[in-house]
Length: 430
Image (cartoon, rainbow, N blue to C red; front, top):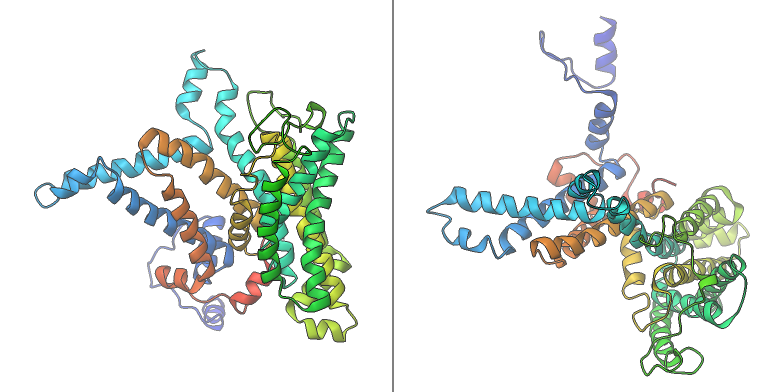
């Protein structure tokens, strides 16, 4: 009787007499409860599932080997479906092998036909790809949490990378000190570019979206110019490429020269821990969030909105500058016109996927690093266009930006967190 009353007070219903309760474990029940309530993390997972499903459809209908089967679908539907399923399976299996581990490589190592490092090569490439993404995405996350839209990570990556690289090949310092000075220089280079946008915002009211986009163009053209001057261009070269950084400035490889995995990942993770402390534990972080949520209320409480804008952009730009420097010191070793590539804009996507939380941003960066690393092998071994990976990334972010759409697909109730804006501003995972 007591159990019945308690159940009715909770608004639930008793199962029919003789019905068996589902035998889910504690974690299974927690996931189902979170799914029913539209929990932010669960919605993210479901968005990834939907994106992979749509990616599977693209593979099934775009693989050249399957096209003839679809042409004879009505005469042999089973053959078309089997061929499509095989293409999807092979593509996703190759994606897994390219970013995590290849069972064939393990078997070859056990048979003495391949060295041990080959087993860890895919996973190391995932981490290598995620390292600059973590730093650049943290730059975007910090600014977004303070209510500023830093679209200029691309330019800040370039200016930070330029200064860090110049210190790397222009100064003669002992190992250890040289690496640290290069990283500090990269932070300073990006911070200066971020400070410009913050100063313009604080002093003139110029919107940071406009100023950071324009500063991107300036940085890109500055890069092109400097790579053709004696200051940066490699001696004796007619190409737009800088000299290689000194060996004393190179970030050490963690597991030998055969893997590109380097100490840059420690720099990225330390910065993530620092950002988590800054945003969640410090007085400055509280001011950042207060200004981001309501600048007028923060101003009334005695906070300097102008000072916060400048400080946020300095930190954000510095983190982006570290991303460019870590990439040069860890894997590239010189500067080319392709420095940063689309890294700055991808960082915005990763930050949104991470729901503007430090932990979520780091996990999203690893996900994108895995997709990028696996996509190369997927295209090489199965012929599936690597553009499918880009589509999957875009679909994931699209569903993350529209949680009601995910809830509609899976028939979930609304979140208890009181709206998407609150959920995004609070972030998840720190």
